[in-house]
Image (cartoon, rainbow, N blue to C red; front, side):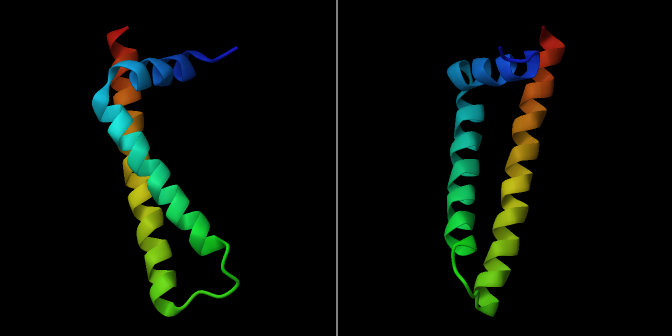
Amino acid sequence: MSTPTEAVREQLMANNSEYRRLREIHLRYASQLDLLSNKSFLTEEEQLEEVRLKKLKLRVKDQMELLVRQAQTVH
């Protein structure tokens, strides 16, 4: 059984192209981070890229959560 917030996310995935776009970007950043985390050693550039990706991923998640909160206030 999904929570009301999960239901809003599902509805946004089905009906909101901006939410879907942000979700796709979030997944892409997560995938890139997974590739880096699977390495046993990161170069200095890779470490910087990891930090950059984490910040970008968090920013996108914040944008997605803003859309969720906006949708919840409408209902």
